[in-house]
Length: 301
Ligand SMILES: NC(=O)c1ccc[n+]([C@@H]2O[C@H](COP(=O)([O-])OP(=O)(O)OC[C@H]3O[C@@H](n4cnc5c(N)ncnc54)[C@H](OP(=O)(O)O)[C@@H]3O)[C@@H](O)[C@H]2O)c1
Image: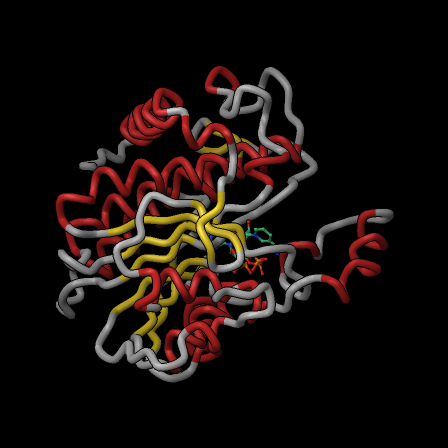
């Protein structure tokens, strides 16, 4: 039975992940580092992706156990392509798990790169490319993809879900709505991916980690939100608790065979009403492919 207080270590009790290779983004700190440490402690070899070579080797060192670092700046699609090539071509065999966890949030100023708004790029599009490029290397029969979404996909996304005609924010930018949109894209991506990889026996799920204190995520908050956060901290999860559902979906036998779902506190949850909208999910997939292709990154899924 899952509890809000479960940790990444407690959900992996009794599991052995010896010999498994797991790729994770956003493990330089916060929830990703807590998840990576717990998975490595159970024997997984962690391939730690971080924004540059120094950050990647520091992340690998912080994880300890069996970990190697690979530079991957998710704001730069060429860097994502290079990282995927380095992992797929390193001759170490199949990948068991890809965890798309890195994220940025609530950027006050609109930033645009590769023709789209920065949160959509880093949180969704770059992970779409990474998973697409790594998918041939995912292990048939048991492979898993885990995508860190957020409850912001439910409460903060724009009224129509994804603003396809405004992906660069030129027709109006709201930091919180664009964060919500990118996190809805995460959950829709995992759901579509589940369908595309089902025939190979590979599962894909998304999750909300909870409101988690002491991560890098809320450092940029300004007064009065910073003060509200300080007051809320005692009631928020620790990074180890925030990482519990990631660890469950990546490494627990309890999550075996579960696919296409959005999870909260170790249980499947309803999530956004848009997760039932097949047309929206298909349009997001097609649009993401088209943008990547226009930027010179053809995809295969
Ligand atoms: N904390 C919460 O309450 C909460 C709630 C719901 C969902 N989430 C989600 O949980 C995930 C992890 O967040 P967190 O709370 O652990 O925050 P965090 O400590 O800030 O972790 C985010 C990670 O993403 C990495 N990242 C950001 N931009 C990147 C880029 N361009 N290239 C490569 N890596 C990049 C960061 O690396 P740097 O350190 O180098 O910037 C960091 O390692 C995010 O997807 C977030 O949306 C968090």
